[in-house]
Picture 1 (tube, rainbow, N blue to C red):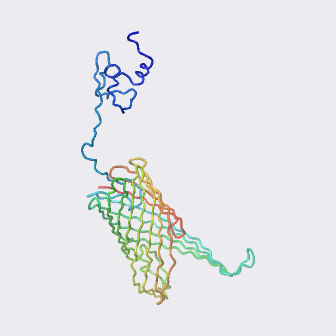
Picture 2: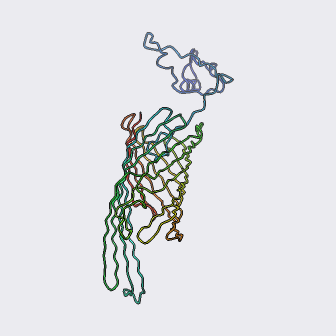
Picture 3: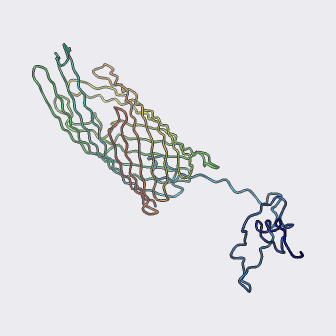
Length: 379
């Protein structure tokens, strides 16, 4: 029968649709896949009588050789605001940030020392000394950070410290004696200046490396500058270390949208100082504070353009301090300070960001908890 379509041809029509003139199979390239329900963009359709649109034109063949130049390499930028202090990307040339902050930390210890002999379970002969210590510290500071170039920024920070200590001691022998000491102190802390320089641009997915240098002064009230009674016991608390220090650091950030991985290593050198002061019956000569080595790692995750959080771990190894007492050199024990870090950040406006962080001590020498709030304001 003339004008009829076989079953095979009908199947092909249903699968591919009609071309410009009937079954225009010759218009398809040999390796071009057949896409179902292919239609031209809405902007190219013109309404004709009967509401039908003109057929789509034949697609142009793909170029056989590259056209133009390759796109420039992209620079990765870390934009997670909740990263720990000093771990984020640089500001950019000419930008200024003013950052007020407040921090609360709590340290406590409870130690029991028995000097004697245990005859039987529950029966002891000797002395028992118990010591319960609680230290609370509130530190507020103002920091100003300015980017001289796209790869170099400087920062200055001035803190104010308030401290409150309570120490309770119990000595039990033939009689029991309990003493409680409470001390407070408030004064300016150790001011510091720092600089950060971005070593590379982090192109094509490479990590970003930032080198840092920090100088800490002794503007705070040091432990050897305190007022003391006739027995050499201090009547107030220190608000600074009493020593100058210089720190070098290297940080790495690896952006992997929507997260940023980070790691850092640092070394702090504490400068020795000749105290030359008599406290009670002890004369303090040269004091060499222990240097410290720090490492840290973690990640920051951006939930959306305004909210992000971070999780990390930091650890510091503090070397022993050497102190000259009455002409004899005394050496303290080393310290291991490890903390788990959790940070949150919310960008309220293009200029103002609210950030909070919580550090939980995981080693005996670390503070039990430290909570801080920051409000960096960008100009």
